[in-house]
Image (cartoon, rainbow, N blue to C red; front, top):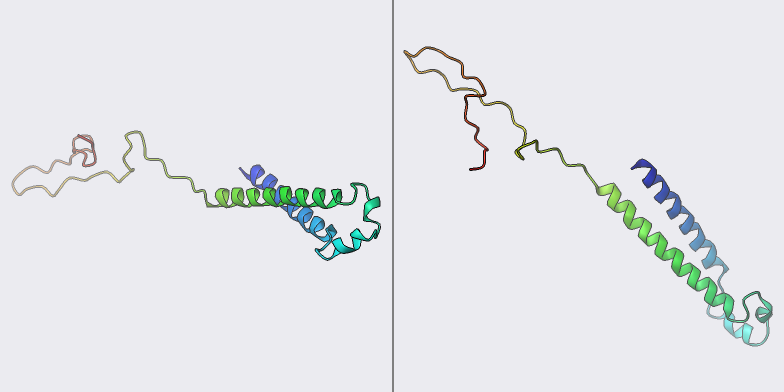
Length: 122
């Protein structure tokens, strides 16, 4: 379980750094007007609008990956193992002791095997 948490944390960190980098690389809304007058964007690797589509789609994929890893870490962090209920399904309790002996009767200690159980399904 520890290796899985470590792997998810590494993926989350890399996706967060990728989102930060891609957001900083993208142009703002006002930069489109300069590209319309030939500010050199048409000579890029992806074409005039290809880089914007590529960067925005990659940012969306990395943001979704970040979201999924955050949910996975939340689930793994909230998971608690439940205590075992035992063979019969009843919680493990201390053995029941016999009541005080009645006056005049011999004091015989009851063994746990002779005392009826209280949580037995009928």
